[in-house]
Image (cartoon, rainbow, N blue to C red; front, side, top):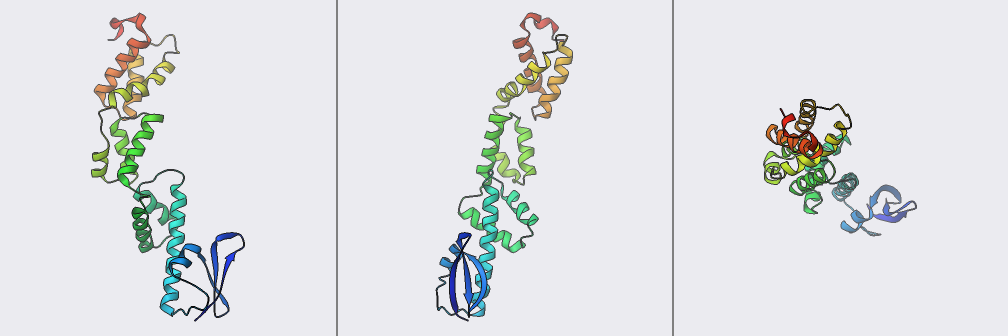
Length: 218
């Protein structure tokens, strides 16, 4: 079987139509054509044709995963789940993940750091909540524990709680007991421990309602 034509696709110059013995065989990524050294007149054995099909399928799966990664960084398991939803063969998924790892496009340590920094900047949460989120995204517990620390929880609790506290205090009849219950519950839902939540509630009440003093913090 001989390659008789290699034609760039009209609507996608990064893909090539491959013709064998005068008949269309398949469309292939230009990178696969180069990788396999395809050129006019080259003879291809049945095994080489199968390799070409396999490499093209792999490249398509890699491209699909790459597009998925353009929206935001992903954990290794997120990419695996995505490719499963796209009905990619298990052995192909492993090959895609191996290639993406070599290219440093997936790295669970880097992803965990990104996730924590993003939460810290836009939606502060306690270390406990962030760890739970990462585990739900398939990041291994060891990686999570190595990457996520609770040393900023006090600071983040104040940041997370201040906006909620201001909202609660728009109610002129808000008393400390109700404030404590509602803000404390909010902070604990955000992954902050009871002690930090309690200290944060008292600190924000004192900051935002100084005229009421300590005596109302029963």
